[in-house]
Image (cartoon, rainbow, N blue to C red; front, side, top):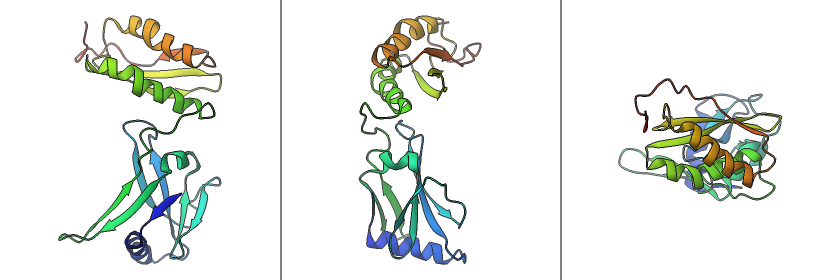
Length: 193
């Protein structure tokens, strides 16, 4: 799953030893996985702080808990530690964190984000705008938030109905409805007022 180099293991083991906590491990997860804002994180994980569906990996020197929903973003990830004049730096390279491998079996949220960030947002970027996914409800309602030049834009209804909704619902027919939760009364950066 995640490759941790020898220097990475040594560094992480030293950090864990300083915590003076029997059974402490690391936990690896990705915040905002599948989006350009994705951030790969390593945190201390004291006994009992792991989640029930975490996958456990034993690296001999320590254990690592991998968040279940982050696994797909952590494929081919490498953790390394490189010494430098300032002491060194731990790096995490996770090439699939921002753009996961999408298939028919991928979660609906990932497929929506893929369409938003690869097909819809590049066109909106010309106007300084973007759309992000807030949530997908249990009854397949997609909740979106407009930002940048799209927030408060006078053409947002056209963009939503004729562009975003049409594109998402054609490609993902299981979507029942699309809602916009943006406060469009804020118009400071709106492309069209």
